[in-house]
Image 1: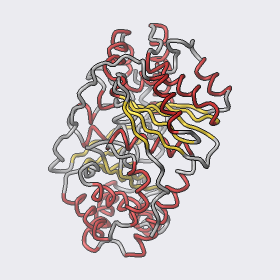
Image 2 (image 1 turned 60 degrees about the horizontal axis):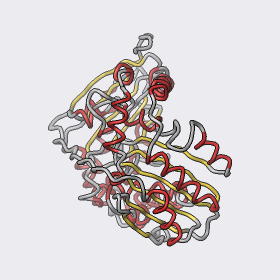
Image 3 (image 1 turned 120 degrees about the vertical axis):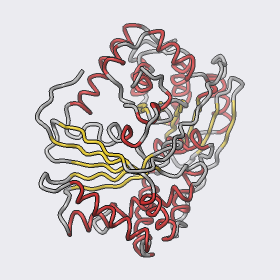
Image 4 (image 1 turned 90 degrees about the vertical axis):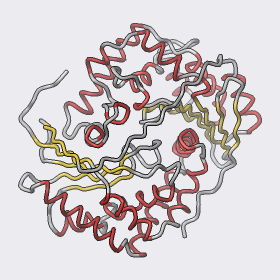
Amino acid sequence: MPAELPSPELHRATLSNGLRVLIVPDPDTPVVGVAVHVDVGFRSEPEGRTGFAHLFEHLMFQGSESLEKLAHFRHVQGSGGVFNGSTHQDYTDYFQVLPAAGLERALFLEADRLRAPKLTIENLRNQVDVVKEEIRLNVLNRPYGGFPWILLPPVLYDTFPNAHNGYGDFSELEQASLDDAAAFFDTYYAPGNAQVTVAGYLDVEETLRLVEKHFGDIPARPTPHRPSFFEPIPGAERRQAVPDAHAPLPALALGYRLPDPAADLDGYLGHMLLASVLSDGEAARLQRRLVHADGLVTDISASAGLMGQLDARDPDTFTITAVHPGSVDPDRVVAAVDEELDKLAAEGPSTDELSRQVARWSAGLHQENDRVMYRMLGLGARELLYGRAEIADELPGRLAAVTPDQVRSAAAALRSAGRGVLLVEPAADQGENE
């Protein structure tokens, strides 16, 4: 049985302003990482301001209370470090990894912008333009842009938080005001709505002292209420077709609801391994059937989690995506997928079949967690989302304990509930839509 990842010491603290702290010493690495996870993502942004959480992530890199624009970049890169940020369904993260001697520099930099980013009309207008260009590059002017993470949710979900485009609508981005940005910062970037994770070569007591030194004087503000984004599972199939001027072949995505990992982690893990049994590796069921045997598709994949495994609170999405020749009716692809799910729902995978996928997962998790950055981000995200960073290190062992019957149950759950079916159809050039 694959072992759990080596259990790190996890040291938790909460500062007087409400900021949560997670410190993870690792004496075997010469670097240190600092991440700030803020409890706001696509699903929390205001209606009428689609894309605002992602836009605000960009604004947080435009200077701060003590540093002009680009100074943050120079300080990190000048120390031999790397940095970035990303926006997810339920959180936004900011992170950097530097040589261990750069710990205090990293803490100062992250604290300075969490205290007071430089919000100016010039920065706002500039970053709106940057985000619009990013949308052109990644969505509007490329084949299968936004597939499936932007295009599938409005088929499967009804509510604005779950269904809307987290990248943003051009007109709504352009209408964003400096007052909107200030209100968003005051509401969601309160220290009580954030968590700092520090991992790597460090002394715990000294690190906590430095965290207190740099973050402790950020004024406390009310922490926003985090609503539930729950909505009922659809009772029937929902279907929608969208044109794609750049797609060379048709594509389709099937979307299903996942169990809540906070309430039913074992059920969620059963779905994770179901996705692997279906599509990971040449011996996986959908690969063998739809690609090699029947030639119905040119590419197929399955995944638990719209943006990654254990990367969101409930509700989240199990997806199966495929690209197929224009001569193949998409209903043939859907029917073949359903047949393979029905087989798994009736019999489950074999022990050997499941063991192969557990071994793939275990190897991948150990490889990923060799890097301080990924280890830090995984621990920090699971701590913020579920209150248990330990889940990240328990995963290999928890997955190894999943039984064929749990995977069978996951397949049966997909077949017994409503789903979303998204069809991407190649179309004549529609032009850019702003």
